[in-house]
Image 1 (tube, rainbow, N blue to C red):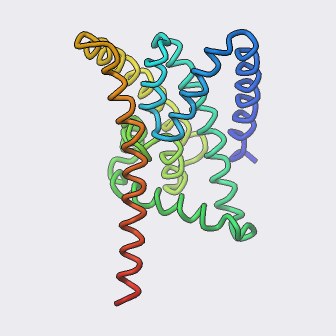
Image 2 (cartoon, rainbow, N blue to C red; image 1 turned 60 degrees about the vertical axis):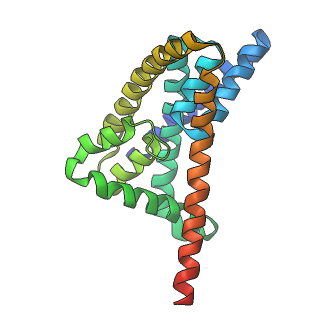
Length: 218
C-alpha cells in the first residue's frame, strides 16, 4: 500500500484544484479562462508553454510559479501512481496494454542516457524543460530503475519545482527584453513553443510508420 500513498495525495490536491478553479470562475471568469488556457498549453507542449502562456496572459511570475507547481505536482502524483498500478496489473487490462507499453518504452529509451548519473541524471532530465522530459516520465524512469516511492518523489518533485522557478524567472526576463523591440513579439516565441512539440511528435510517428513498413518489406 505504501506505493499508492501518492495517489491519495494526488486525489486530494486534484479536489483542491477543482474547488479553487470553480471559485475562481465565479469570482473572475477572465482569470479562470486564462488559467485554463495555461493548463491546455501544458498538455500540448509541456512546461514552457505553460509558463509562457501565463506570461502572455499578464500574470506575475509568482502566481505562475504557484499555479504550475501545484498543477504539475498533482499531475505527477496521479500519473506516477497510475503507472505503478498499471505496471503491476497490466496483464489484466489488455485494452490499455499498448498505452502502458508505450510509456514503458519511452522511459526505457530515456533512462539509458542518464543511467550512469543515477539520481542526478534523473534530476537534470526532469529539470530540462523540453517536451517528454518532464517529471512524469522521470518518475517512470526512477520506478523502472528500482527506486522506492520516497526516493522517486524526493528526486523528481524538487527537480520539477526548481525547474518551474528557474525557467519562469528566466522567461520573464527574456520576455521583458523582447518587448523592448515591440509589443506582441513575445507571442511568436509562445506559438513556437506550442507548435514544435506537436511537429516533433508527428515527425516521430511518420518515421516510426515508415520504419515499420520498411521492415515488413524486408
